[in-house]
Image (cartoon, rainbow, N blue to C red):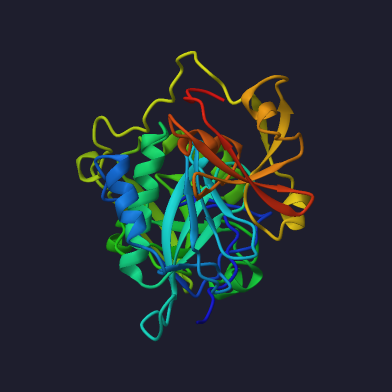
Length: 359
Protein backbone atom coordinates (compact mmCIF):
# COMPACT_ATOMS: atom_id res chain seq x y z
CA UNK A 1 0.00 0.00 0.00
CA UNK A 2 1.77 3.15 -1.21
CA UNK A 3 0.96 6.31 0.72
CA UNK A 4 0.11 9.60 -0.95
CA UNK A 5 2.49 12.53 -0.72
CA UNK A 6 2.23 14.73 2.37
CA UNK A 7 -0.49 17.34 1.85
CA UNK A 8 -0.53 20.69 3.63
CA UNK A 9 -2.21 23.37 1.57
CA UNK A 10 -5.29 25.59 1.77
CA UNK A 11 -7.93 24.08 -0.48
CA UNK A 12 -9.53 27.33 -1.54
CA UNK A 13 -9.91 27.37 -5.27
CA UNK A 14 -8.65 29.47 -8.17
CA UNK A 15 -6.39 32.34 -7.10
CA UNK A 16 -5.16 31.06 -3.79
CA UNK A 17 -1.71 31.73 -2.44
CA UNK A 18 -0.53 29.93 0.67
CA UNK A 19 3.15 30.85 1.06
CA UNK A 20 3.43 29.46 4.59
CA UNK A 21 2.07 26.01 3.68
CA UNK A 22 3.87 23.17 2.01
CA UNK A 23 2.89 23.12 -1.66
CA UNK A 24 0.47 20.47 -2.83
CA UNK A 25 2.45 18.02 -4.93
CA UNK A 26 1.95 18.91 -8.60
CA UNK A 27 1.86 15.26 -9.63
CA UNK A 28 -1.37 14.70 -7.70
CA UNK A 29 -4.71 14.85 -9.48
CA UNK A 30 -7.62 16.81 -7.97
CA UNK A 31 -11.19 16.08 -8.98
CA UNK A 32 -14.14 18.43 -9.19
CA UNK A 33 -16.64 16.45 -7.10
CA UNK A 34 -20.17 17.42 -6.09
CA UNK A 35 -21.71 15.80 -3.00
CA UNK A 36 -24.77 13.59 -3.07
CA UNK A 37 -26.51 14.71 0.12
CA UNK A 38 -28.18 12.25 2.46
CA UNK A 39 -31.66 13.13 3.67
CA UNK A 40 -30.96 12.32 7.32
CA UNK A 41 -28.20 11.67 9.83
CA UNK A 42 -29.34 8.04 9.98
CA UNK A 43 -28.79 7.59 6.23
CA UNK A 44 -25.34 9.15 6.52
CA UNK A 45 -24.42 6.85 9.42
CA UNK A 46 -25.57 3.81 7.46
CA UNK A 47 -23.40 4.84 4.51
CA UNK A 48 -20.48 5.47 6.87
CA UNK A 49 -20.76 1.98 8.35
CA UNK A 50 -20.43 0.60 4.81
CA UNK A 51 -16.91 2.08 4.58
CA UNK A 52 -15.51 -0.19 7.29
CA UNK A 53 -12.08 -1.41 6.21
CA UNK A 54 -11.99 0.92 3.21
CA UNK A 55 -10.30 3.95 4.84
CA UNK A 56 -6.73 4.44 6.04
CA UNK A 57 -4.22 6.97 7.33
CA UNK A 58 -1.64 8.51 5.01
CA UNK A 59 0.79 5.87 6.28
CA UNK A 60 -1.56 3.07 5.30
CA UNK A 61 -2.86 2.14 8.77
CA UNK A 62 -6.54 1.08 8.72
CA UNK A 63 -8.99 3.58 10.22
CA UNK A 64 -11.34 1.58 12.43
CA UNK A 65 -12.54 3.97 15.15
CA UNK A 66 -14.88 6.55 13.59
CA UNK A 67 -16.81 8.79 15.99
CA UNK A 68 -19.54 11.33 15.19
CA UNK A 69 -20.99 14.15 17.25
CA UNK A 70 -23.03 17.18 16.27
CA UNK A 71 -19.82 19.23 16.12
CA UNK A 72 -17.25 16.95 14.49
CA UNK A 73 -16.30 13.60 13.03
CA UNK A 74 -13.07 11.85 13.95
CA UNK A 75 -11.13 8.94 12.46
CA UNK A 76 -8.49 6.97 14.35
CA UNK A 77 -6.12 4.08 13.76
CA UNK A 78 -4.70 1.89 16.51
CA UNK A 79 -1.98 3.70 18.42
CA UNK A 80 -2.43 7.07 16.70
CA UNK A 81 -4.08 10.37 17.49
CA UNK A 82 -7.47 10.83 15.81
CA UNK A 83 -7.94 12.77 12.58
CA UNK A 84 -10.62 15.29 13.57
CA UNK A 85 -12.82 17.25 11.15
CA UNK A 86 -14.63 20.11 12.90
CA UNK A 87 -17.86 21.03 11.12
CA UNK A 88 -17.78 24.67 12.27
CA UNK A 89 -14.34 25.39 10.77
CA UNK A 90 -14.49 23.23 7.61
CA UNK A 91 -14.35 25.32 4.42
CA UNK A 92 -13.59 22.84 1.62
CA UNK A 93 -13.56 19.18 0.64
CA UNK A 94 -11.69 17.70 -2.30
CA UNK A 95 -10.79 14.31 -3.72
CA UNK A 96 -7.24 13.66 -4.88
CA UNK A 97 -5.33 10.73 -6.30
CA UNK A 98 -1.89 9.83 -7.50
CA UNK A 99 -1.36 9.99 -11.23
CA UNK A 100 -0.92 6.19 -11.23
CA UNK A 101 -4.17 5.61 -9.36
CA UNK A 102 -5.16 2.63 -11.51
CA UNK A 103 -2.20 0.55 -10.36
CA UNK A 104 -3.15 -0.25 -6.77
CA UNK A 105 -5.66 0.26 -3.98
CA UNK A 106 -5.64 3.18 -1.52
CA UNK A 107 -4.17 5.68 -3.97
CA UNK A 108 -7.15 8.00 -3.43
CA UNK A 109 -7.89 10.40 -0.57
CA UNK A 110 -10.36 12.93 0.77
CA UNK A 111 -8.92 16.25 1.94
CA UNK A 112 -10.87 18.30 4.47
CA UNK A 113 -9.54 21.85 4.81
CA UNK A 114 -10.35 23.98 7.88
CA UNK A 115 -10.37 27.77 7.89
CA UNK A 116 -7.42 29.86 9.00
CA UNK A 117 -4.02 28.25 9.39
CA UNK A 118 -5.35 24.80 10.29
CA UNK A 119 -3.73 21.80 8.63
CA UNK A 120 -5.90 19.71 6.31
CA UNK A 121 -7.20 16.32 7.38
CA UNK A 122 -6.32 13.66 4.80
CA UNK A 123 -8.18 10.34 4.78
CA UNK A 124 -6.97 7.62 2.43
CA UNK A 125 -9.61 5.64 0.52
CA UNK A 126 -9.51 2.26 -1.21
CA UNK A 127 -10.78 3.67 -4.50
CA UNK A 128 -12.48 6.66 -6.08
CA UNK A 129 -15.99 5.46 -5.22
CA UNK A 130 -15.10 5.22 -1.54
CA UNK A 131 -13.54 8.72 -1.57
CA UNK A 132 -16.63 10.19 -3.26
CA UNK A 133 -18.94 8.46 -0.78
CA UNK A 134 -16.92 9.84 2.14
CA UNK A 135 -17.07 13.34 0.65
CA UNK A 136 -20.87 13.12 0.46
CA UNK A 137 -21.05 11.84 4.05
CA UNK A 138 -18.87 14.60 5.50
CA UNK A 139 -20.63 17.27 3.40
CA UNK A 140 -24.00 16.02 4.68
CA UNK A 141 -22.93 16.04 8.33
CA UNK A 142 -21.39 19.50 7.93
CA UNK A 143 -24.64 20.82 6.45
CA UNK A 144 -26.60 19.16 9.28
CA UNK A 145 -24.38 21.03 11.74
CA UNK A 146 -25.44 24.35 10.17
CA UNK A 147 -22.33 25.01 8.06
CA UNK A 148 -23.13 23.96 4.45
CA UNK A 149 -20.07 24.09 2.20
CA UNK A 150 -19.75 26.19 -0.95
CA UNK A 151 -19.06 24.00 -3.99
CA UNK A 152 -19.14 26.84 -6.54
CA UNK A 153 -15.36 26.86 -7.03
CA UNK A 154 -13.71 27.93 -10.26
CA UNK A 155 -11.85 24.69 -10.72
CA UNK A 156 -8.16 25.55 -10.39
CA UNK A 157 -5.42 26.24 -7.87
CA UNK A 158 -2.53 28.67 -8.21
CA UNK A 159 0.56 29.76 -6.34
CA UNK A 160 3.34 32.32 -6.71
CA UNK A 161 5.44 31.39 -9.78
CA UNK A 162 8.88 29.93 -9.14
CA UNK A 163 11.97 31.07 -11.02
CA UNK A 164 11.61 27.98 -13.19
CA UNK A 165 7.98 28.92 -13.99
CA UNK A 166 9.02 32.46 -14.92
CA UNK A 167 11.91 31.28 -17.09
CA UNK A 168 9.68 28.77 -18.91
CA UNK A 169 7.40 31.66 -19.90
CA UNK A 170 10.07 34.23 -20.73
CA UNK A 171 9.39 36.44 -17.72
CA UNK A 172 12.33 38.20 -16.07
CA UNK A 173 10.42 39.67 -13.10
CA UNK A 174 7.99 37.88 -10.82
CA UNK A 175 4.37 38.48 -11.77
CA UNK A 176 1.11 36.61 -12.20
CA UNK A 177 0.09 33.32 -10.70
CA UNK A 178 1.09 29.89 -11.96
CA UNK A 179 -1.67 27.28 -12.23
CA UNK A 180 -0.57 24.24 -10.23
CA UNK A 181 -3.75 22.16 -10.53
CA UNK A 182 -6.81 22.18 -12.75
CA UNK A 183 -9.65 20.18 -11.25
CA UNK A 184 -10.59 17.25 -13.43
CA UNK A 185 -14.14 17.72 -14.67
CA UNK A 186 -14.31 21.33 -13.45
CA UNK A 187 -15.21 24.48 -15.33
CA UNK A 188 -11.59 25.61 -15.69
CA UNK A 189 -10.60 22.34 -17.35
CA UNK A 190 -13.57 22.59 -19.72
CA UNK A 191 -12.47 26.13 -20.63
CA UNK A 192 -8.99 24.89 -21.57
CA UNK A 193 -6.90 26.10 -18.63
CA UNK A 194 -3.87 23.89 -17.95
CA UNK A 195 -1.35 23.34 -15.17
CA UNK A 196 1.72 25.49 -15.83
CA UNK A 197 -0.23 28.41 -17.31
CA UNK A 198 0.65 31.79 -15.81
CA UNK A 199 -2.36 34.03 -15.24
CA UNK A 200 -1.53 37.68 -15.96
CA UNK A 201 -4.99 39.23 -15.59
CA UNK A 202 -8.59 38.36 -14.75
CA UNK A 203 -11.47 40.44 -16.13
CA UNK A 204 -8.96 43.14 -17.06
CA UNK A 205 -7.46 43.32 -13.55
CA UNK A 206 -3.69 42.80 -13.57
CA UNK A 207 -2.17 40.07 -11.41
CA UNK A 208 1.13 41.73 -10.59
CA UNK A 209 1.43 39.97 -7.23
CA UNK A 210 -0.59 36.81 -6.73
CA UNK A 211 -0.71 37.17 -2.95
CA UNK A 212 -1.82 40.80 -3.10
CA UNK A 213 -4.38 40.02 -5.81
CA UNK A 214 -5.79 37.10 -3.83
CA UNK A 215 -6.09 39.16 -0.64
CA UNK A 216 -7.30 42.47 -2.03
CA UNK A 217 -8.89 41.95 -5.47
CA UNK A 218 -10.17 38.40 -5.81
CA UNK A 219 -12.74 38.67 -2.96
CA UNK A 220 -14.34 41.63 -4.78
CA UNK A 221 -15.02 39.67 -8.00
CA UNK A 222 -15.66 36.11 -6.81
CA UNK A 223 -18.22 34.63 -7.09
CA UNK A 224 -20.38 37.52 -8.29
CA UNK A 225 -18.57 38.19 -11.57
CA UNK A 226 -20.56 35.63 -13.53
CA UNK A 227 -17.64 34.98 -15.89
CA UNK A 228 -13.86 35.10 -15.89
CA UNK A 229 -11.79 36.32 -18.83
CA UNK A 230 -8.14 35.40 -18.31
CA UNK A 231 -5.02 36.57 -20.08
CA UNK A 232 -2.36 33.89 -19.70
CA UNK A 233 1.05 32.78 -20.87
CA UNK A 234 1.48 29.16 -21.90
CA UNK A 235 5.09 28.33 -22.70
CA UNK A 236 5.71 31.98 -23.63
CA UNK A 237 2.64 32.14 -25.90
CA UNK A 238 -0.05 34.72 -24.90
CA UNK A 239 -3.55 33.27 -24.83
CA UNK A 240 -7.03 34.18 -23.62
CA UNK A 241 -9.25 31.83 -21.63
CA UNK A 242 -12.95 32.39 -20.94
CA UNK A 243 -14.40 30.52 -17.96
CA UNK A 244 -18.13 30.24 -17.35
CA UNK A 245 -18.88 29.29 -13.72
CA UNK A 246 -21.40 26.52 -13.19
CA UNK A 247 -24.95 27.74 -12.69
CA UNK A 248 -26.33 27.81 -9.13
CA UNK A 249 -29.03 25.34 -10.18
CA UNK A 250 -26.37 22.74 -11.02
CA UNK A 251 -24.87 22.78 -7.52
CA UNK A 252 -26.48 20.28 -5.11
CA UNK A 253 -28.12 21.79 -2.05
CA UNK A 254 -28.63 20.06 1.31
CA UNK A 255 -32.19 18.77 1.74
CA UNK A 256 -34.53 20.76 3.95
CA UNK A 257 -34.64 19.31 7.44
CA UNK A 258 -31.17 17.75 7.38
CA UNK A 259 -30.00 18.42 10.94
CA UNK A 260 -28.63 16.76 14.03
CA UNK A 261 -31.28 16.02 16.65
CA UNK A 262 -31.43 18.71 19.36
CA UNK A 263 -29.82 17.89 22.67
CA UNK A 264 -32.31 17.26 25.47
CA UNK A 265 -32.56 20.27 27.74
CA UNK A 266 -35.18 19.15 30.28
CA UNK A 267 -34.27 19.31 33.96
CA UNK A 268 -33.78 16.06 35.79
CA UNK A 269 -31.13 13.88 37.43
CA UNK A 270 -27.63 14.83 36.27
CA UNK A 271 -24.44 12.81 36.18
CA UNK A 272 -22.63 15.41 38.25
CA UNK A 273 -19.36 15.90 36.41
CA UNK A 274 -17.81 18.19 33.79
CA UNK A 275 -15.42 17.13 31.05
CA UNK A 276 -12.58 18.67 29.08
CA UNK A 277 -10.72 17.54 25.98
CA UNK A 278 -7.41 15.74 26.42
CA UNK A 279 -4.09 17.50 25.94
CA UNK A 280 -1.51 16.19 23.46
CA UNK A 281 0.65 14.85 26.30
CA UNK A 282 -2.32 13.03 27.82
CA UNK A 283 -3.14 11.42 24.47
CA UNK A 284 0.47 10.21 24.22
CA UNK A 285 0.31 8.81 27.76
CA UNK A 286 -2.63 6.57 26.83
CA UNK A 287 -1.05 5.46 23.56
CA UNK A 288 -3.11 7.61 21.23
CA UNK A 289 -6.54 6.49 22.43
CA UNK A 290 -9.36 9.03 22.44
CA UNK A 291 -11.43 10.17 25.38
CA UNK A 292 -12.17 13.08 27.71
CA UNK A 293 -10.91 13.99 31.15
CA UNK A 294 -13.17 14.55 34.18
CA UNK A 295 -12.47 18.14 35.21
CA UNK A 296 -14.87 18.50 38.14
CA UNK A 297 -17.09 16.25 40.29
CA UNK A 298 -20.25 17.59 41.93
CA UNK A 299 -20.23 16.56 45.63
CA UNK A 300 -23.10 14.18 46.31
CA UNK A 301 -23.89 13.78 42.59
CA UNK A 302 -24.25 10.51 40.72
CA UNK A 303 -20.63 10.48 39.55
CA UNK A 304 -19.46 11.13 43.11
CA UNK A 305 -21.62 8.25 44.39
CA UNK A 306 -20.18 5.98 41.70
CA UNK A 307 -16.63 6.84 42.89
CA UNK A 308 -15.56 8.69 39.75
CA UNK A 309 -12.60 11.01 40.34
CA UNK A 310 -11.20 14.22 38.90
CA UNK A 311 -8.53 13.21 36.37
CA UNK A 312 -10.25 10.00 35.30
CA UNK A 313 -10.22 9.60 31.52
CA UNK A 314 -13.50 8.39 30.04
CA UNK A 315 -12.58 6.33 26.98
CA UNK A 316 -15.97 4.80 26.19
CA UNK A 317 -19.64 5.04 27.09
CA UNK A 318 -22.13 2.22 26.55
CA UNK A 319 -19.64 0.25 24.50
CA UNK A 320 -18.77 3.07 22.10
CA UNK A 321 -15.41 4.92 22.14
CA UNK A 322 -15.56 8.58 23.17
CA UNK A 323 -13.95 10.97 20.68
CA UNK A 324 -13.96 14.14 22.80
CA UNK A 325 -15.79 15.95 25.61
CA UNK A 326 -18.59 17.19 23.34
CA UNK A 327 -19.24 13.73 21.95
CA UNK A 328 -20.54 12.23 25.19
CA UNK A 329 -24.06 13.58 24.76
CA UNK A 330 -24.70 11.38 21.70
CA UNK A 331 -23.60 8.24 23.57
CA UNK A 332 -25.75 8.62 26.71
CA UNK A 333 -28.97 6.66 27.13
CA UNK A 334 -32.06 7.43 29.20
CA UNK A 335 -31.36 4.49 31.50
CA UNK A 336 -28.16 2.84 32.74
CA UNK A 337 -24.91 4.25 31.36
CA UNK A 338 -21.73 2.19 31.43
CA UNK A 339 -18.42 4.08 31.42
CA UNK A 340 -14.94 2.64 30.87
CA UNK A 341 -12.32 4.81 32.60
CA UNK A 342 -8.57 4.98 32.77
CA UNK A 343 -7.21 5.85 36.21
CA UNK A 344 -3.45 5.85 36.74
CA UNK A 345 -3.07 3.60 33.72
CA UNK A 346 -5.59 1.02 34.92
CA UNK A 347 -8.89 0.41 33.12
CA UNK A 348 -12.11 0.22 35.14
CA UNK A 349 -15.86 0.10 34.51
CA UNK A 350 -18.42 2.28 36.30
CA UNK A 351 -22.19 2.10 35.96
CA UNK A 352 -24.54 5.02 36.59
CA UNK A 353 -28.26 4.23 36.66
CA UNK A 354 -30.57 7.29 36.73
CA UNK A 355 -32.45 8.67 33.75
CA UNK A 356 -30.01 11.05 32.07
CA UNK A 357 -31.12 14.25 30.34
CA UNK A 358 -28.04 16.45 30.75
CA UNK A 359 -24.52 16.25 32.08
